[in-house]
Amino acid sequence: MLFISPAAAEAVAEEAAKAGTKGEMLSLGTSLLDACLGYLVVFIGLSLLMLVIIIVGKIMVASSKKTAATAAAPAAAPAPVAAAPVQKKLAPGSAGGVKLYDTDPRDAAMIMAIVANKLQKPLNELKFVSIKEVK
Image 1 (cartoon, rainbow, N blue to C red):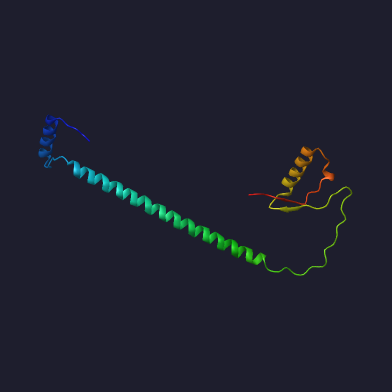
Image 2: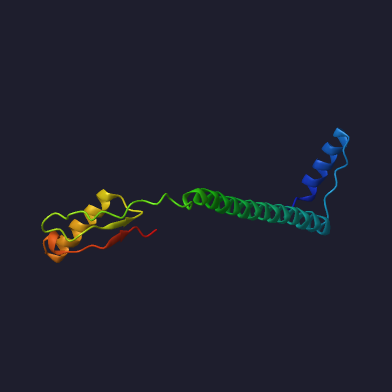
């Protein structure tokens, strides 16, 4: 709140009269009402913005699920029946194959080397069944 000396208020009133405007001070009630209405407008605006963001987020999640479902549908089509799987002869000292799920073969090799190093065992004595990246 602004407090003005009576002389300054009189000077402002004289300048306002010269400019053709009515120089009057707002009462405390009017000032509080203006402030509350201003805060209310800002609060309602922010609430509406939050509501729009939530709605758009739900729409995007639904559309991404729909896109993922349509992308997975062609992949789920049955593959042509192949001949019986051929057993590959493993290299001497090998412990078998490793199934990789969402993992790059280079990263899988690095993980296997780190595990063998930490256990201080040769890599051909360890058997890795599968490696999956946890997201």
